[in-house]
Image (cartoon, rainbow, N blue to C red):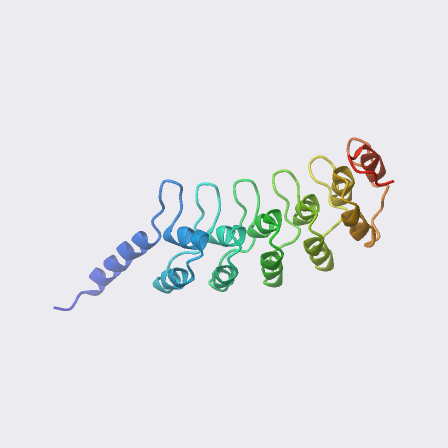
Length: 206
């Protein structure tokens, strides 16, 4: 006996609801597969119609988790499946910021290559460049600067990436930023320029 169109639509709706069911953390099967690096499962779920942009309770999408756990293949599959590159979690952090915070330069490069914004700021006002400086990751720093990241962008405390580098005593990072022609006398909202922060740093930079 053939199913009516109404029955088929009903079954499809139920199937879709199950496919995108969210657990008590708001995570779907796609979230879990992305976190665990299950490439074949990711492909299967997407073929069935799993929604890649459903956010968990903390605002993370499957793409956030793939980026955090450095799953290259899954990150690209999710991007090509329509994942929102700039979706922010509850802290205002998109996948690129999470990848940078983890120090994943290859994932960061991939996200940027596919068009992720390098200018987004989280709730603290930090950009991807701020976080790459805090990690002292000069590979990501150079890539962000080449992509057009603003090295003079201030966070909520008025600190630019150069201020942070001086504060943390990151000599090589400071050199990398200075090569971009930064203004070393740019002051934070507390009135301190990078030189003042360098002097207060645990490392001697001057």
